Image (tube, rainbow, N blue to C red):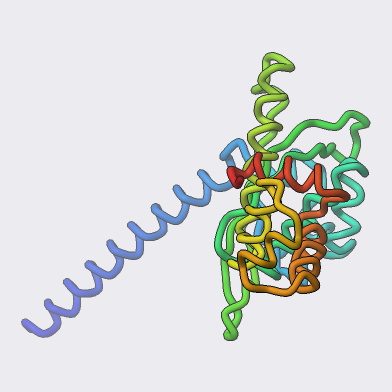
Amino acid sequence: MNQTLKKDEDLKRLQEQLRALQEKYAFLERIIHEVPANIYVSDLQDGVTWCNKTNQETLGYTLEEIKQMGTMEYMRQIVHPEDLNIPQDSITHYQEFTGAEFGGVFRARHRFQKEYRWFIGWARAFAHAQDGHVKEILCVDVDMSPRMSTEKQLIAALRENLKHKNELLVKSLSKRETEVLSMVCKGKSSKVIADQLCLSVHTVNTHRRNIQSRLGTANVADLVVLAKEAGLG
């Protein structure tokens, strides 16, 4: 009799725990789907694997439609042509560098609307493969348009975003590349840099070409501006 009573009590306790978990799950699910931000998970190989309801309502595509059309085609449909580098940069960032979040400002629109809206997006590593490389990223995009009452606010946000992006780019450099870049910012020639770092001029020039390629700058002047905006030099 006591054993039967104990089983009944255990069953009741499990049912209460299950009910509490269901209530917690429903509460968290409601937050995720009603939060005023587009939240989605993207596999670096397979593309978007999940998104919240806000993302679907803001841009007009269901998760099933996104999967059917493919992530890059989906991005081409919603993101402004001049800003398509942002989603691609996010993927490239996590393929090459896993040490920080990635952010970007871009324009996107609902599938049935002509006007684009400004978004600020952030991504961070969400899941890793067995080899340690990032497999999935968690992305959050916030529509800034209704929150920016003046053009001045938008410009300030864009400048801050550019600064952060440049900081991430500089952090992706190797220790030696950072040393070379710091000396370039001080106006030192390849010959001087080579002498101070005990390298050949050829090696220094190779580093300089690699740095410009990685940071996406066309000339030394742009390189120095980017580095100084990131706090180097």
